[in-house]
Every structure is written in C-alpha cells, then in structure tokens.
Length: 315
Ligand SMILES: Nc1ncnc2c1ncn2[C@@H]1O[C@H](COP(=O)(O)OP(=O)(O)O)[C@@H](O)[C@H]1O
Ligand SMILES: [Mg+2]
Image 1 (spheres, rainbow, N blue to C red):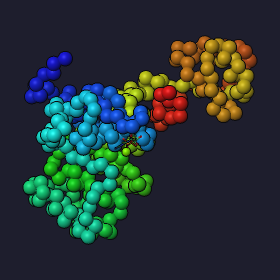
Image 2 (spheres, protein in one colour; image 1 turned 30 degrees about the vertical axis):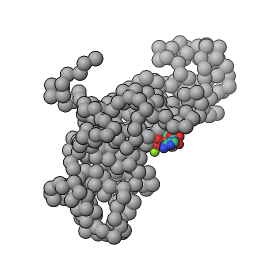
Image 3 (cartoon, protein in one colour; image 1 turned 60 degrees about the vertical axis):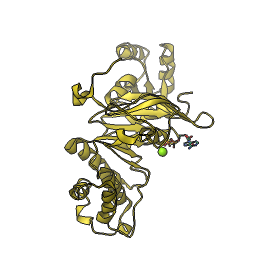
Image 4 (cartoon, rainbow, N blue to C red; image 1 turned 180 degrees about the horizontal axis):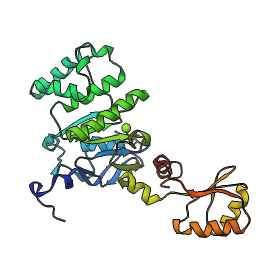
C-alpha cells in the first residue's frame, strides 16, 4: 500500500520505527524472524522478551550494526540502508553499558563526543539537565554510581538532540532507586521533550508503568504488539472463585465444560467468557458449594507476559 509522503502525514500517525519482514538468522533456530514492528512517533515503546529472545539482535538491526538477511527498517519513514546511516540522523542509542572515560568528568566525557559530532556547546548543558546530572557534571565518572553512569550514557545519546532514543536494557544492573530514576527520566524525555523512546527489557514490571506501547518477543518472533490495555483486553481477566472446597468446585466446573485451575486451597481461577459468570455462579450455588467470593480480578500484565513467554509458551 502506498504511503502518503512524509510531509503530508500528521506527526501522531507517523511511525518512528517500522520494520517489515525483518529477519536475521544465527545457527540453529536463533535470531529474529519476520518482525513487523510499529513504533508510533511520541510513544514509549517497551520491547519485552526473556533473555535470548532476540531483543539485542533486533536493536542492532535497527541501528544498522547488524545486517539483516531479509526485510527492511524505516526510521521516521526513511528506509535504512545497511551501508548508509543517514536514516539514523535523528536516533540516539545506548546498547548495553556505555563506554565512558572514568578519569574524566561527565562534562569532559560529553565534550569528547561533542567535538566528534561538531555539535553546539550548549547541547552539553541541555543533555546534562535532561538526565539530571547538572550538579554532578564536574565529578570524575570513576566516582559515579552505576545509575549515574547509565544516565550519562543517555546524555551522550542525547547530545545530537535526536527525536528517537533506543535503549537496550537500560535498567540492567541498577538498584531499585536507579530503576525509579531511569523510569522518571524516560517519562520526562517523552512528555517534556517529545522524544520517542524504544527500550528493551526482560522484566515487564520495569516498563509497565511507563510504556504507551509494548511488543512481546519470544524466540525471535513478535507475539504481541499494541497498547498495554489491548494486551489485557485480548487475554481478558480470569474469573476467580474463593470457596470452601476447591476440589469439589473444580469438579463441578469441569462438569460445566470449563478448565479450572486451583490457585491455592481456597481459590480457583477459570478463563471462562464473562457472559458465563451468571450461569456458573447459579450452578455452583445450586450444587451446594460454599462460595465466599466470585468475580473477575484483573490479571497482572506480569502474569500475561509469563503466559506468553514462559515455559511451554509458543511451543
Ligand atoms: N552474533 C551472533 N552469533 C550467533 N548467535 C547469536 C549472535 N547474536 C545473538 N545470537 C543468538 O541469538 C539469540 C538472541 O540473542 P539476543 O538478541 O542477544 O537476545 P536478548 O537480547 O533478547 O537477550 C540468542 O540465542 C543468541 O545466542
Ligand atoms: Mg540483550
């Protein structure tokens, strides 16, 4: 399908990243296969998957650090060619740990890169301010915490004032306080500076609160892509029944054609459609079960993520 020219496309409809049939195989079945990523401009996109799913491989393909076997990458509508990095002009990235000079200050580290980029001096102060390191800018990086180093890495990635920031597992190795800081930083970059942020993680809990969109990768394939709300809606919330005799209630549910799951000695969970609630309730009471609580409890995204990618998934 033909796309309208870039200028004619409203900003909110533009995709910051789009891949089509993107594949890169390694030995065996490893790699990524037929990826169709759609990262809306202005979004915070959480790219989720367990270790080994292919997140770093994907990111290296997005940054032309790795050559695809098939497919294409578009950045803000512009096709990325393997040997021509012009489409990456508006992209800043941090893949794994940033390489920093420990004996130099944060400001000096930024200055080294600024000279290479031939950027404006003012961009250093702006980048430091965004990542919240202005007050510590003249301390040697050797004395920085891991969280501060990560933020300095992001400042380096922001130095040429990109519209899209790609971060590979930026919370890796951070303590809980560092994770909160990073989350706040990502939110500010998106809301105050309009930067689209694409970040990978193997922990949904880390991106759940900030992602406007999520993609779930498992064994190199995209299992889901959309808003966290859509992810929840697609899988629905299970019916949870608190009762006196789990075994008897399970037997009755099986009799009703359901597939119950005993969660503990007093709780049963069923993935029945919501319209069946009334009928299930009536039948259980009719059969004399003691029902203490009956209702839909929101399934955490964490549970969904585990169901999508955990043992036995995608087999
Ligand atoms: N250069 C490579 N050569 C061979 N196999 C690779 C290479 N890079 C990654 N892989 C394999 O591809 C799979 C995905 O790796 P990776 O993209 O690093 O996953 P993730 O970042 O999600 O943990 C893994 O099984 C990994 O061993
Ligand atoms: Mg990785």
